[in-house]
Image 1 (cartoon, rainbow, N blue to C red):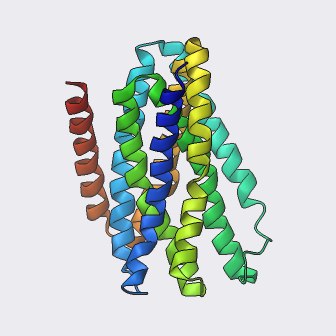
Image 2: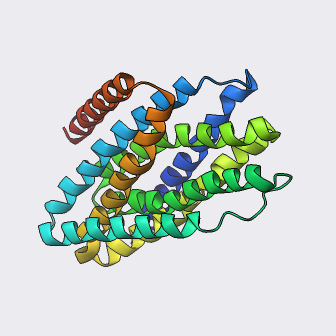
Amino acid sequence: MPHSATLTVFLYALGTALCTGLGALPFLVTRQVPKAWLGALNAAAAGLMLAASFGLVYEGISYGLARTALGVLLGLGFITWSSRQLRRHQDLTLGRLNGLDARKALLVVGVMTLHSFTEGVGVGVSFGGGQTLGTFITVAIAVHNIPEGLAISLVLVPRGVSVWWAAWWSVFSSLPQPLMAPAAYVFVETFREYLPAGLGFAAGAMIWMVFSELVPDALEDTSHGVVATTVTLTSLAMVVFQTLLRT
């Protein structure tokens, strides 16, 4: 296997992680970022990831329907179990934060970090399906990471954490992506028969994230109409983008 291909996957995934830090940048201008912005961004990320997830399923089915379906179920089971385990442990501290502030901050950073593992797998296995699919999924996850960084910063900055430390914690929450992506890529390249299961696994986890995390968060911060319209338009844009990449 060419080392250059593995390095490319790593760099793409590292780029998605760095995009998370962009979510802290609005706080350089104002400490009062409108929650409606976060709602719209979460809705946009939901539409992009939903379209990307079904792109993974479509690609996986071309290799094997049963293995793709099994992968979706495994991804769904893993992300629900992991999230449940994480929410049971909220009694830690984070730097100078403690009590309810620390629990809230740790929950947000922890959930984002947990999700990043599956997103890293998504990047890696998507490159196993080719450069076009890999680029498509990477763009979707990179855009999705920006509102994740904003969400983390909205928790940390009002509680006294500096903007740059908030940016660091945002990027930190996405570091599993460049760590997991090359490993997932090497695995599916070495064991090609597992590629459809890997694509399905990433899709199942991402679809769960859309409806369990992104859409509910968006609905808390902005209107149903804005969320529905944004999800629809960004899903359409991502489908068009995928089609153009394949032509």
